[in-house]
Amino acid sequence: ILSLTAPLRAQTTASEADVFVAGAASDRIDILIHFLDRGLGPDAPNRDGVTALVAAAREGAESAAKLLIARGASAIGSP
Image (cartoon, rainbow, N blue to C red; front, side, top):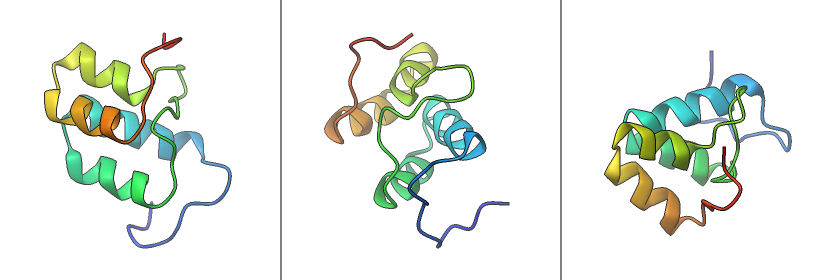
């Protein structure tokens, strides 16, 4: 179980990135902010290599996409 207050380690686990990307797909801004504020890069891919911005775009999660772009996410080279 992920702690909502603990800072992220230098190396993000696959499960953390999976939650981050799923949060983007679900337009869950609170999840995105949680991870971004703790140091997760906006382009961190999940286990399948999908980034949060791509997941948000696929699901029409406009608020998530806007936040990710504002935080520096790149659409270049995303699967």
